[in-house]
Structure formats: structure tokens, C-alpha cells
Image 1: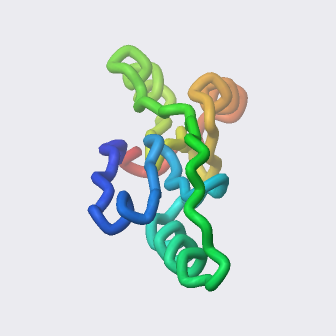
Image 2: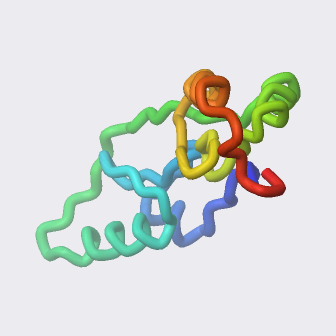
Length: 112
């Protein structure tokens, strides 16, 4: 599963963004959109809330290329929620997942 979620208008209106891996509100990052929404709403309900006009630049994460997917398949690595997964482990970088898969073969998820 590597399709980038489409943000609902309510998230965009609250200033939440998605970089392909995490949801962001102000300087905070969340794995789940529900957490980002909850904090943004709580933050905005404070009496002393001030709109943050500082532009934030988050690195955009792209899914694996077709060539990378071939390498992943050969080792049983899957891409889920912006992470490379091998067995019970999650990696930010494909190179790290591949290195561990070569070091410890046989951890691939069934059907993965």
C-alpha cells in the first residue's frame, strides 16, 4: 500500500499537510491523520491561539521506482505507509532494508 492519501478539506483548512509519509501540523509530525486533526483542533481552540504564518517545507517522500520494486520483491520487502518493511522491521531507506534482508534472509512476511 503506497498510494498517497488525499487530505480532506477539513485537514487542509486546519493547515495540515502530507508529505507521502507523515501528516504535519505546524512543526509536528504524525503517522495518523486522526492525531494531526485532533491536535490541530485542540490547538486552535485555545484562547491564545495565533495563526502560524511561517511556511514549512517538508521533504516529499516518493514511493519506490519500478526498478526498486524488483529488488524489494526479490528480498520480500514491502512498502507501507512511507516505510520499507522487512519482517517486523520498518526502515526509512530502501538501502537499509535491503542490507538487513541480505544479512538475515527469511524474514519476509507471508505473501509480502
